[in-house]
Image 1 (cartoon, chains in turn red, orange):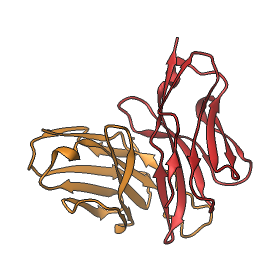
Image 2 (spheres, each protein chain N blue to C red):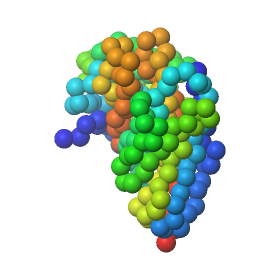
Image 3 (cartoon, rainbow over the protein chains, first blue to last red):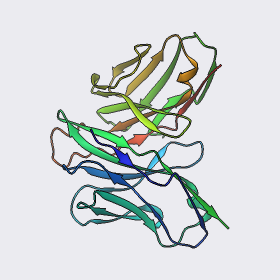
Length: 115
Length: 119
């Protein structure tokens, strides 16, 4: 089974500053990688995904993430954050288990953007 | 035109009661899931159904019983509620289970969540 580690439970940052949210996963077998965002009192929305191809993936709202297979990482970045980016961010990994895709989520990183 | 809808959004009840949460998706997806999010925001898979067939059943007390009358619906019934059941329960769906394609990486579409509070 996979484990997904988000080392930072909270990341405070000032508006317009760059940010990186870290994600590492445990297994080196073929996986698919995702970042989801959860705004207060809402469900999770897909930010971006890596399935194959270019290791740099661009998502919505100006976010991007880079897949690093050797380091089993999938860090999320944004060059300039807005107040509206304040939310909980979840890294997720999908791997095939018994012919089904099974998802594993990290514990989340709370991004707090300050004015 | 909500893609994945859950009801109720909030549920407050006493210990020992039985309650249900309903989920419906209008995306035409084959696979549906129930996730539990605890107070620390940790998300844990509970169940997954593919076209009405149970495919994932994690270590969940048997007080929790999912039911899928058709592939667009996945309901969660909880018997004899306990304080530790308090959480936000998310329903999700995905297009298919990925057996047909190496790139069948299912993107999960989540509902808005059902916050259960057991007193």
